[in-house]
Image (cartoon, rainbow over all chains, first blue to last red; front, top):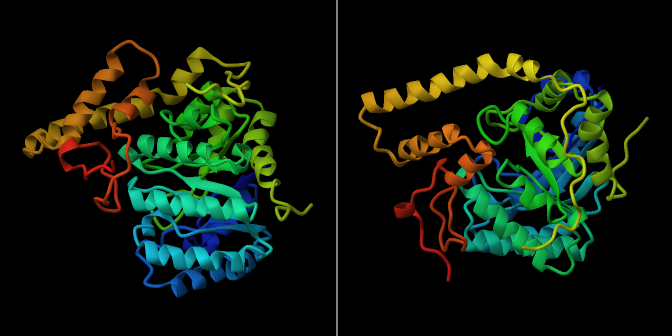
Amino acid sequence: MRFIEPHGHMVSRTTDDYQAMVTAGCVAVCEPAFWAGFDRSSVDGFRDYFRQITEYEPARAAKFLLPHFAWLCINPKEAEDLALAADVLAMIPEFLAKPNVLGIGEIGLNRNTRNELKVFEQHVELAVKYNQLILVHTPHLEDKLKGTRLIVDLLRSHPGVKPERVIIDHVEEHTVNLVLDRGFWAGITLYPDSKSSPPRAVDMLETSGHDRIWLNSACDWGVSDPLAVPKTAFEMRRRGHSASYVDQVLYQNPVRFLSQCPKFRLGD
Amino acid sequence: MTQPRSPRTSARLPAAAAQRAVVDHSFVPVRAKLIEVAAFLDRVERYGAAGDFRCAALRQAVKILVDGKPARARRILEQLSDPTVKPDLITSGKAALGAWQKSQSPKRAK
């Protein structure tokens, strides 16, 4: 079995995790910019972080033969500070030419505030201006449905956004069709306590289709499992889905989406 | 309602889907989760916390389990969701709570 981890915050993980992922069949990992668990105090904190995920982390992953890619943004949890967000947005273009950068993400909403929406829109403008792929974070728990609607409405109202170049992540049963029916890609995140479990993820694949969906662990510094994707493959096989079905969802789908960025290349 | 741009075509069960197997694989773990829900509701009553809005939301949500209609997971998630449509003017904190409470919701944008 081969799989791609399209959403892993590897700076928060250990080398044991890299080893376990590669052993389980991981052939590439993608790291969206995210919240550190605390608010950064200045734009320089983001500069250091962007250097970490575009320079240092790819080298760390390479020690385990794992190609590492990155997405850049100021995440929605820090988007209430509009001045800081403006500084970070102005800096992002410096890093877009880095060889492992795939696009802008994970942008989106956290608590569905007016400031978050403003910064989300600014990121979308940046992505369109620089012809970048977009990776969208949708809010947690009770905020997800409203936030996903706000996100989808904003994206659809922008004439420069191509839905096939946008993946909207962390969908659940109440948002997956909202995303897919409007032409976007959808990401299902597998978490032990929130978002989706492996059985629920496979339920969504069975009822909503698997053409434009990828699975990810979104493993980070919180309760999460970097092997959640291959464990979901086991759930698929146990239900009788074919090996080719598993391969399409875990490998071919992310390759199809990510290959829209010419920098996404896998070795032999 | 906007028409879908790209219809979904691959929604299907595996060819070899077995009715019995899907129960065999999941029944005991799901049974355990159901008992966890029951024990949680007992526990919050014992501690005098059953009036918490999240506990009330949970009691409402479990009714969906036995209403005999499909899409139970989707409907429970919808019932626990913020039903408003306008962005909030200010944030109420970084973390969501799992259920929506009208009285603590910040003022909405016009």
